[in-house]
Image (spheres, rainbow, N blue to C red):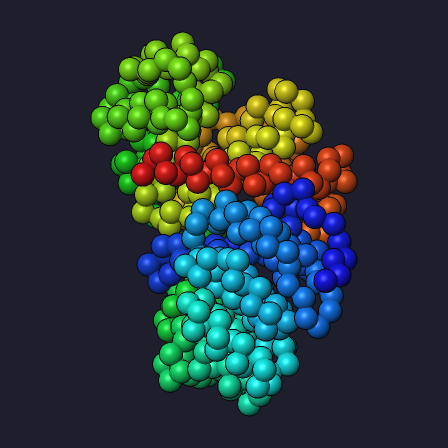
Length: 415
């Protein structure tokens, strides 16, 4: 075996995750995207016949499990890795072997694919194009990944018909808008990947529900410069379920307080205004997003923690304190299906936060940019931002992994 690079410091130095949702917008799994084009687990392996050392693949399994929360993960496997059964160190319950249509398809490769599936592993054929050479693989795959915008409606229908004939389901990838999702769903796709769920529906602005207005009033009150506890306490007490959820959360292991919190007034004394502002905002956003895909809330949480921790390293203490809220509120337009400018007109946020949320110049803007670059797996953008902020890329990756783990923990506590 010839390893051409050295072991990574952590799994996040190589991978980020992109959610794949089902037709009901529940999480199906994550597509794992590798930094710098590294797509075969943790190492680039040269040679016709080589198998990664067991301890490295075990490291890969643990790292991928942390990154995806034990959900299914689609991992790009090169031809030789499939032939060498390198996947055997990964769990067949979660690992989906993603093979490229560009691989050489011969009897050896088809047999290797068949054996992988016989061993209990699901397989996905990536970026399929109509080519007779690929036909032998169709009997052995579970998923077909399709770059949605690259095909016309007739080609989409042909793929769905092929799925019905061969027994695979189609994944519409790189969906950018809610309209893309609606069309892909109508055409018969089963799974959906892309940034579309983070975008508001393009429809005429509708009046917000009474409950939504209540949480916006709470967000406004808790983020006001002249923090008024009595007003916040009254707004929280008007909603019994909100009070229960907030106290449950503050007493959870995720928060780590040593003293049990039994009232909102006590929480202020224990946390201080700044921390209470963050966590009340978190609960309010969680309540606002209940009718939306859970992954939208998870993405908000990841952004919040990432903006907070990166901000603490690159901004002044005063400015960095707003990083958490910037990330937490950055998807309110998708949550409420309202223009961000209209939502912000109903809130009392600092000018730095407002400018960042409107994608205007602000000290906080680059924090959001980092979050977006990671979500898209745009490594050049990440490198440019790291240079501008004078922070190591490895540090950004480490904080990304920590943010993902934190968001998973918080989501579990909220359930």
